[in-house]
Amino acid sequence: MKKRSPLIRRKNVKKEAKRRRFRFLGRAVLGLALAGAMIWGGRMALMRFDFFALRKIEILGAPQSLSQAEILKRSQVTLGTNLFKIPVAQVQGRLLLHPYFKSVSVQRRLPHSLVIDIRERLPAFVMNASDRLFYVDADGEIFKDISDSDDSRDLVVLSGFDEDQILLEASTTRKRIADAALLQKLFRETDFGAAMGLSEIQYEKNIGFTLYPEKKKYSIKMGLKDFPEKLKKFQEIWEKIEKSNSRISSIDLNYPGKVLMTL
Image (tube, rainbow, N blue to C red; front, side, top):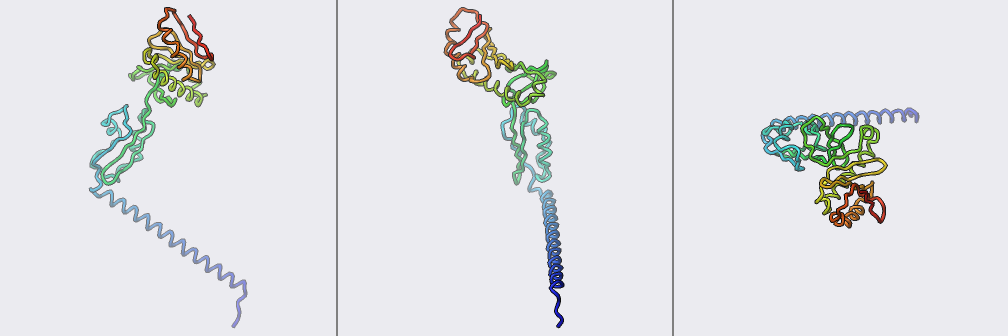
């Protein structure tokens, strides 16, 4: 018998290996195609079952800016619709158009429910910037221009920022607004804060924050840091100021160990 050369044997082995790979790839492609067809067919079948008709829409997150009826109207989802026919991504997109909604999750809950989970941003201030009025939240995000709207202005005014700062120093501006929100919160938690109220927080780049109490004629300079310590310092002198007949125009809490008052 004539023997084959090692070179011919190697070529035959390579050809056989190649044929096996092609057969494997062919089976894999066919299997994926069948699986896709089964999934598509199964989904089409599910979309025809009345068993999956929507009976309940659950709204989570306790949103305050819109009523449940208004949210349902915006979602454009109606009871009785097959759950698998509801385009959840489109529903989510429609709801996210509302400026108060920071995030929206829409999920099917088989067999009969749709769950809409809303995380809302609420205004902490009315920001006055370059003669425009904006709502800003406690995270420092400017989310609605209310200059030409009927939205309430019954909030603490945050002033001292302009459009250049907002656009060119966005991250710093956002941090400063969040600092102002923290300062407002700490102020309101004090006895004197509850008694005096707060009308405005003014920001100056090189000075920091100045508070303007609603029921007093003087201002309180707070700087940019150490707010709890400074408010505690003011607490210690507040009763003396209340009993004093002096006409104070400003109180500066930025000097360690002392309080400067301007008459």
